[in-house]
Length: 385
Image (cartoon, rainbow, N blue to C red; front, top):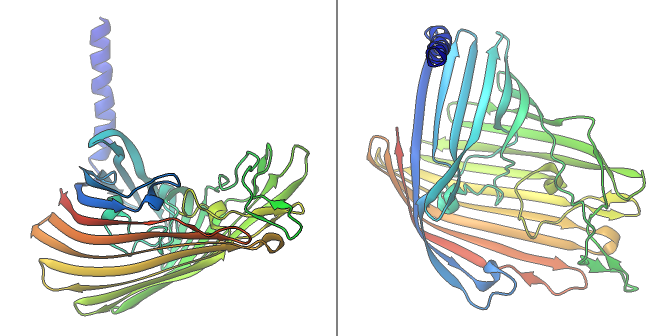
């Protein structure tokens, strides 16, 4: 009897989900992406203690290989997409969510809620090394996909996003970022037991102006929260302001893409920056001193025919802070050249050479730290289905 009830319940659930879906238009898609590269790294790019450079073969499925679906029913639409969340030693360990959104078109505009790209995102580059780097954080502004509520009116997008508060550490720093003239050590922003109070969500606004030949999209972003900076109840605000623009121009079979982003406190805002050499807002006299930030990129492409498209690009990211006259500077850049070759409809092989220069970190009163370079030469293989 119990088994019969379970079977009946399963059939009822299938019917419950299937009958309403009959009036909806579903479209499913997916692709697999595979990396075959030789990866060369300077010893400085491996670690501070490495004694020699290293060359390895990268032979694995990319972690952004994906499967998804889009559905539309009248004024309501939805989008879900999942991907191989982690890939190690040539095996896919688990699946992670990329997009999950619902959208209501109310005539004058649309309302989106869910998890998808942040409003401030630059996906112009087709750089494919390092599992599809796309110059993200290396010239192309990027903070990943964020939980959000978004309103769209034509080319205008207004997003209220989940705030980022992980840019500041909750432990006391032990390594000075520099020294004052009297020998006093200056430490980075490392509040002790710092409680975070958020009043507003992250706010992002962008507007795209487009013609048949080109489009341009300026954007701004703002985030602020209060951070307890000691074991007392004293707090101070940590504010980030990001602004810039991106765009693309078509010249027949050729195209040019450009992007420039400026602002303050990119790590605190949640932008992609170097994980180990990030310059963070510094606590000085009970106030966080800002980090100045700039990121820019450019690319050119040419579609030779329906089978082959060439592309080359360059991107750079810079950060600088100057608390108490102790200047900390960090920069990194990348460039690449590739060719997207279509072997059959939906079947691509993309040979590429990419160079990543991890740059250097410069601190007043300390020896400059060179962080080494790494390069990739090989190809990505992709099948869309």
